[in-house]
Length: 355
Image (cartoon, helix red, strand yellow):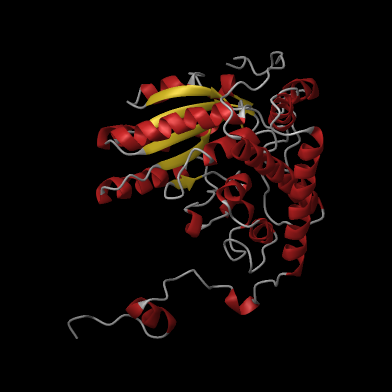
């Protein structure tokens, strides 16, 4: 387990989770590289005023993102926070559509309507990033409720940050999830800071597994800087939730190398602390492990990175070339376009059913 004090020294620790077969291990590394390169380019695009609104990057947290996605079946549901570009990419959404969404273009995953905080891909059961801290938690439980109601074996993975565990939605939702025995896994991405406030300053209970257990939701902790350890922990939680129809909480101990958002001056932590955590960067550490175990060689790893950069280059070109939404489409999607509702919203007021 990582140090409890976020200001403390962080010794290097090599990944130790179980390695899958060669193809899967290589794909995990390639996807982490894609997420990292995509977010680096998104940050550059933001500084060039190509991206509007806020931009929250998950650089440093790729092991949690990819490990979580690889623990799910295609038929399972995934819902995230406003830090969700990587989840969409790991779930299989085309990078061009994700970048176009950041650019506010019509070809974006949400038609350019949502931007960075609202990536969405129903075809892949990625139910979006959500801009309100803790706002996605009851929605995730709602997906699990429909799975339980329909009697299928789908599981919902609901991602939240450490700061969201202080929101009322956390306690209310976990209580009902335990009471109703919902097939949902709550993944707490504990990056030590709720925005710019360290966990010791924003939570009286810093062991977030205990928070879940106090509400009737069993939990476990994993090394969120190790993609294999994360995938193993979440896979176990997902299969327990699937088989026993009950909620589980997983606390992934990780760290973000960039600020809370692109507008964050990062006055709350030292550069030395960030550099110490970079010693546990999940991408080079996993790369070194795969090289040591003969799964990839240095040249092969460099080629995977080049492929990731090429994918991101293509995504930027696609976003740049995509059209802006037409001004007359401003109100599209605001109201339902079905049946009588569309009729009275667009023309006459509703009629009295008795007339």
